[in-house]
Length: 487
Image (cartoon, rainbow, N blue to C red; front, side, top):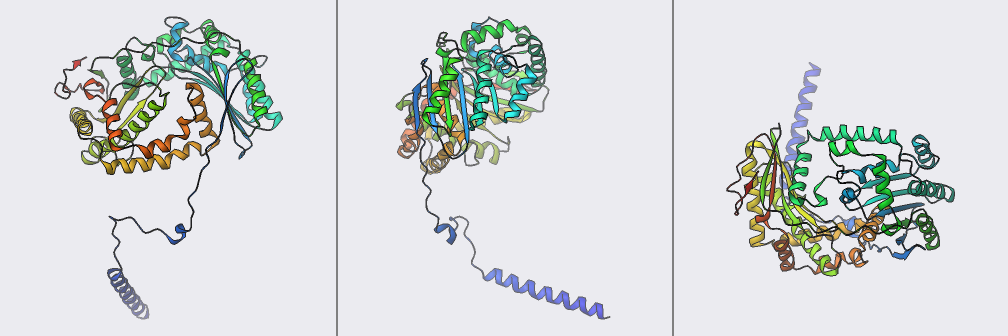
């Protein structure tokens, strides 16, 4: 009986407290979420943080190799990159069907050098606790080193780097193993609709240009690669006349010059790689790649400007970046994300981006959708793009993305790695300091007319090459305003 009375009293007490809480909640001032939330008192005391732009020091080695050195004293760390102006787009200059040779050369550079076989080389890296890697893009082959700046560690690391450059082993049995692993990976990629779409898009976009092929090469071309091909690529392109060196970190300028000269001395002089031709414009078309998948992967796009190298180009690049963020950026405020994902539910994500390379770039929009919705999704995407080009980005959209870009830009200087990446890009393409330190001014000065003009000058939907990968080929004959060549 006593327990029952206690339970009744407890229930009554909870009911009274709940009613009181409800009344208190009703009497509380409601928050208007349509307006900005008030700033916490503690945040009012926080002063605006000013960031200092790093100083990019430029000089050349005794052999004439361009160097950018950025002194950063915050961490006992040094980043060094050696980049050569020749990547997979130069594969055919070694042998007509040696596609993938630049990528394989980069791969083998870290598999033994000088008196060190692969195992000894890897043990030396691990013992020093350094990162020492190599990789290739369409335009470049690059080697990167990250090490503590302690003299013994750093100069032992440099010794390994110099061995890579001057005495790579390029062991035949190692090559066969790496080819086998790459071929297995490429076979797996053949089951990936996004990979198939990217390959078909690049082939259609660049046609007979060296940019048309994937950096890895394909299964058939990788099979043919030989040690002789690797050595020929190295001898022809990994030379001083083709190199730039970027150094970032806790060093003096004298130390940086000494390091750059040591690296330069490891390279034969050689000849600078020739400039690639510009690709010809491809005709708008729809290409469908059959694939056993309920989802259809879609890429739509066309040629776009090459790497920006002048102040006028930098302005155009900034203006278009602002417009594209409003139209096709990754946030849910972007028009395509709002319309194609949020309102229509066609996809989890849709993105548009400009990819700039030495002699030409491309603009592409990528997404996946249910096969039964592919046509409607493409049609809706085209409608959003047409509206943006015709009516322009709105001032509210520009203000939003301008603030976003302004606040994001300092992240380019937030770490040694990000500063080094920026300096490396500037060095590879011969860009002036204004490329990095003038971006916020370019954003602030961008007008709505500037941004919309850049959008209209860059995106031309009537020129779109559309690639679809999936079970069923969607009928796109009425999607574009021009006649499509269906394949």
